Length: 271
Length: 321
Image (cartoon, rainbow over all chains, first blue to last red):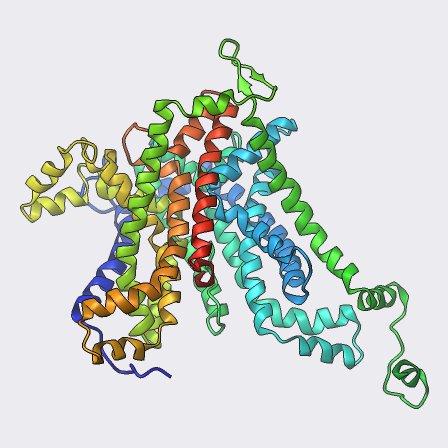
């Protein structure tokens, strides 16, 4: 028990914490204002006027839709692969002890711990050496590799909380391995896997550093945005897309938080 | 023996095996847990081993190749020439610049993160705790490029920050800062100051989470005992809180340091034309086509992070992750 219940914080600490949180959130909120600006050529503040016409313009841009479709397909397939690989790995690592167990956790975390540019250039040079042309699948290959860790983290945390005696009880009551998996293990893990899957989807949807090396000429949404940042064509359209991207990534995060909020782990740690 | 007893008819509770391939497999996995373990580990290990480790090794091997300066072709013979090129003055400049930036970003993140983490760990309860958690989580998971884009809007010459300084009558301060050598520039979005702010902004949540986790474990009565014994708040911070939070800060610094070392997009979009390691790797492998030198460049952050992780492990930072 803590003895500090009900005590209030010093004013200086409150102000510093509030300023820190504002620093984290105001820039993102600013995106929402800029999506409505009438100014086309510059980033002038305050906006000279407000309009919703750029939403219609963006809606009619085929390149935006193509990028969005590619991003969603890549994220869906990478998430599916990561779910299978991450869960298998988490099950093996947390249910049994064996030689090299620590090495396997390190191996899973490595694609996230090393800077993305290293993963990216390593994959690219491997594709070059093996004469693999860039395609949808080269993007998926990169994304699935670093999405595994998110699923793995969530699954490992859930395994830690689930006691092995439930599985033993199921076996004692006559269920075979597959029945135990279907009726005992899976229901217990559904929310952890869903949360891991949501985060993996958000991670893949947003990834740009590895993707620049594995996409070739294809454009995912982040690559499209990067192009616009380096060589701006129509700034208001970029503003609208940026706002939509914020909203699209917000929902899976909130949902993942909702699914894991009662557990002892942090759903997003180790992004 | 128990097995004999179980098999005899006096124990009717035992069900017959489910039979078929499924039953056989189920029994096999039960008797041979190692086989199941092997089958479970095989797909992830094959994937990570071949796709990831395989590519990494291929990359590192290429750093021992060299490029023919006249034809631009890669000479596939073992040589240390590329590493010699890496230690030219211009490249050492890039490495030094990147490491300095990473250190400054880490320091600033730690300073900004501490009050947030401390408030969330010690004072926030219930609804506020959830709010703080989401308040850190949402920016962490928001799109990386959108965050950079937001700062492009903020730091632009005609943007909100210049406007704010103008309203406060502080434009002279901004102009004075921008006219300084090294940190200054034409506007904030093309200066090292801008690069620094964006780095701190983007990696800050990675620092808050482990520091908060470390502070959660500090019992509140420890802080009270310290003040009961006559320590000023400053002394309590210096002698009690800070040493206990240090593993968390080191854990967070692994992220802020490593991510800054490898990033090439932030300094490209907001910054000067002087390169960072990530940009050097990108331009060497792309426009210059010098894969060996790019590979040698990637070894630099790997080695730095190797030492960093080794030091962090000795400080007990991994328990705070």
